[in-house]
Image (tube, rainbow, N blue to C red):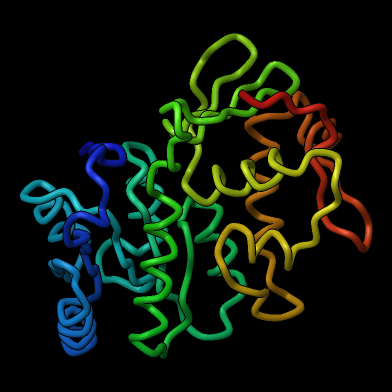
Length: 250
């Protein structure tokens, strides 16, 4: 099932369409009411089949996806979604489950939130992800600034990456934002905290927060000739990551 790519109409002009996939009806109801009270259009689903039906009726801008679902778990659903669309996904995981958080990001989730959570934090995460999903603001002449490096081209206006042969390479929203943050600051070492702040507007949740590492690994699989010996996105021990390339803008 295919979900349309980012809408041309700014989400700031209308209520964002949120789909909450959660089998606990009480939690789903509380979340839905809170989001509706704060300017979101919300639908709910209790499992993957209900989610598919809801998407067929009204494709969402963002899916809040519980990890532990009956029949088909959240990781499997996220993998399936990523095979056909770039819809934003925030995954709900059990508190302290580091491995679930990492696998969720590897499957293509844009962000995660441990349970139990404050609905206000979920709303803040939704708004942050939706801002990242928006088309970049055009310059005064109407042409968005792009980034060219090592034969690759990153186009913020179209949210598109093309390889040296001109083929489009699919990136999740989180992957795109991380690559853009690096491309905007070439040959400059950026710490994990800096990259989290630049891309997600938040600091690391602790010494074992590997979300940036996971996203860098995913980018290397797509950009590098040999992901184990990266030439573009390099690791600086005790420092962070750096895009080791000259970047041309325009």
